[in-house]
Image 1: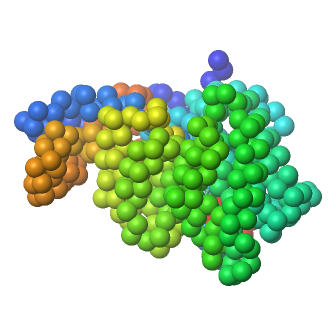
Image 2: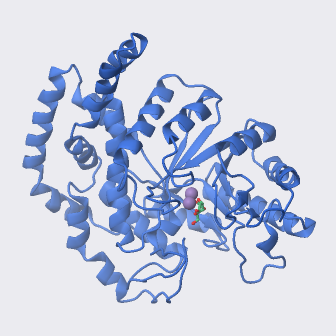
Image 3: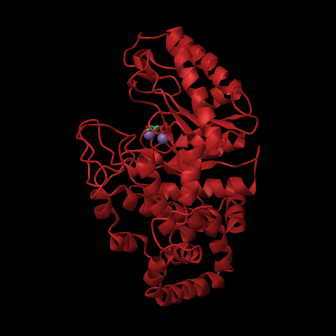
Length: 431
Ligand code: AFD
Ligand code: MN
Ligand code: MN
């Protein structure tokens, strides 16, 4: 297969040559510390090496708030340039081999060709996302009244047809799941009937479900607000699991960490969804106020760890074929998106590694014996470990860069891209 990788392996090797001795020292020293606890560091590293998370195609562009976006020179302007940037993230970090595209933002005429283009960049495709939460040029119907739950049958039909087209595109790309997030809902009490809007959603979603290939999943993403601030049709994990249950076994729930009320116990939601075999996927990000789409773990890394603690528990006790699709969903407003994605992937891997370190027997016996402090300490002793050498060693062995951010700056990628990529216009927009 033709290869079109943006960074040469020589460049990565010379970067690593300067750093490998120090990394080995740190890895060995951590290995001895963990060894005293009975943990084999190589086994943890092997788990980390297998863990992957998808990058959102929209995440490599600069995002914005409702009020402003500050574009940077050299940011990608189409799916082809986005894939190039995703390839840089993957080559340096080695944890993000798949891209989650969003349609119609990433629509092309030749999806088989796009799949080959991605493969030459060392990438595959993850869940495809359908966008019926904004109007697009050329659409006959407006989503102003909602999409799958609109009161207008023609709008619902258009939303169903778009989701079906996304499935077709996804098949050509080698994807196996469709993520559906609708912004449907209301801003005023009385605006819509709360029961009937859900009926309409379920009926339309069932038509999408019916178009799923045998081995596909439909991931329902809930969100309690925006643009519908009074009521949202799929507002919370309760609505999500009820809808997924009604649709059938191929429908599961997707948890976006920013889509809950502040301080909600998301790790418990994860455990609940898993208990009923409905935990389908994740959108990692962090938030201070709401759906801020800040970088994963930047505000509350402990919560991210607790979520992963539940995921590792779930993996040990799988129900209904535990196989969640892990994706990042962030809006990079003031950083270079590639740097944010590199840093976020590292944070996600760290939270996972810390959860793997938890002494499950000690935790279980403390829980069973109601030894509250020792149960807490079983988590705390792992959370406190600096697992950076494990993550870096796994990445190095997979061909990535030991210091991803330093290497990204060394190669001057953004400046080079600024020479020929079209400038992006001003504007607003959460992506
Ligand atoms: C939204 C949701 C959803 C959507 C994305 C688009 O999180 O995942 O696809 O942002 O930018 O807030
Ligand atoms: Mn999301
Ligand atoms: Mn979101």
